[in-house]
Length: 121
Image (cartoon, rainbow, N blue to C red; front, side):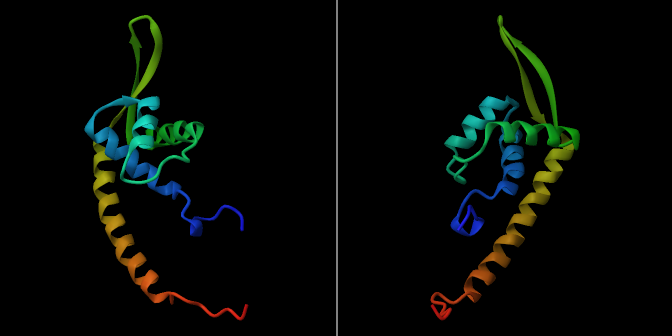
């Protein structure tokens, strides 16, 4: 079986609320976001593709959830620092309600699936 969410791989749609949650605490640059996600005990983010993360940050900024600015760091290469916007905070509130609703539906679905399925094999 190819890579499938049924095997427990990372559900990429959860990256948006995860980023919003981190940036709600403090502004940070992309690499810091990536490091914090890798170290997070909320979910297993170990399979996040750094390029995909930066694409997601760009999309989130384009949709008004994030704002960014370039900061020079004492002669070191300038870094783009991201911060959550008011629209992003509102989105995070909606994510909480959505995730709680998903949890209830997922619990019902999981309970409806028999532990042993006789598929004739």
